[in-house]
Length: 582
Image (cartoon, rainbow, N blue to C red):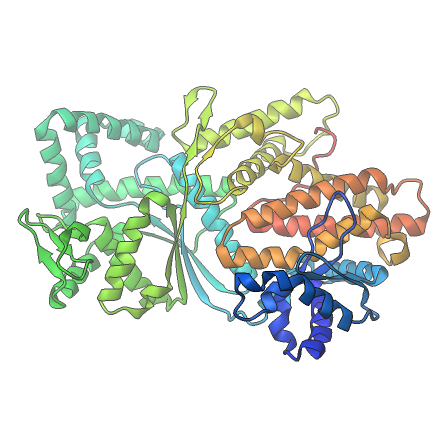
């Protein structure tokens, strides 16, 4: 792995610079593969070594790089030393590079890249990730898809790095919308429809009662009364609410199963309806609760009495709000999990909300508020099915499956698949996830069905196809070749490019671990797939001498292993049989 070479280079630099090797490790990075020319394997940024680095020192960086390079010597690990723009470049002994990388990939398996020195000083932590969080009694809206797949990625990555992760689905199962829904069901609901297609019927009821409440003050008043009855623990109101909640969770679990996602805990705002009253008492006892003319209660976040930045925590009727329940949930989770970090994954429209929640926790005296983090994301635009505007996630999943099945059916060379529906859905999900993860999470992006299903280019379909094709090589040529290999048989430019790219995997994982952005891993896997496609065309296994065929098969097996590792982190299940219909 890269850390073996990075450590060797750092030790030699240490002797010249009189610095501990540990101080140099993170300044030495693997060089990205170039299509135009063969590049060095590692580079040291001289810039990163200069203390008090001011702009007027920049003209000297090139001179510093050359002076440093002249003091260094090639050895059994480094075969060539050169300089670039402010860098010292190191080329690794080619046969050592080949042997070390391939052996490490095979030996480490799913842990390849995670055992790197880059993570050696990383303490194991207790991490809570709250994500997905759909609204109960409503069908799973497509707007919650991003929170679901992003939260799953973050949880996967943290778990892979050895942290103890708790995945929480914090359901929107309390509040004024249940006043509307309870009233709406009493006016427009049918028990038969509720049992046959619960969430579709509840959605229709919710839309209808919203229209009525806008035009009819008595309906709006009935909704407020129903909401108050819930808050006061009215048995009949709670019974109806519980039925809506149970039916909703059943539906969500079925959809999460299709997505390949699980949770350790299903929580919800309802869990904190009583504890939120304790929060209000605590705020009041600390002198932080201010009553307004309207009868609501707010917390002043300005520190100077400017209520324009205050956060409302109680309605005029004494009932709690979303922010109050989030405060109660955070306090409860610290008591329950004693977390080192808690991550909330929601759309960027809630940035202000979480800033206020974290600030209130802090002024309440909870120093651990600094351990709370909000990961915001942008909006998906233009996601429509052939029937029109998409509202529900299940419509998208069904559309994905349908389109992939049609693609498969249109290819005459289609192989017989055991479960074409499941295969189609997994390829489609990979396509959806890769399109979503390619850019900055905070950015909005334009959804495109055509781009999603391209089998060539930077798509999830291409990743699945590459993985399946590489697996078919192992199936076709058997494991007899995989006992040992001759490193001298993998010195072609295409082989070296693949090996160089495999070297970089730990750095890519490290970058994603720092900023929680999946795009680094996505970009890496797409490049790896393109390099593998080029190598597959030029490095034939069939009709090659056994020694050459064996070495090449080792290379392709390593690529497939790393590709699978990265895909799983992203929440994609790699497929083994696809080749033939793409």
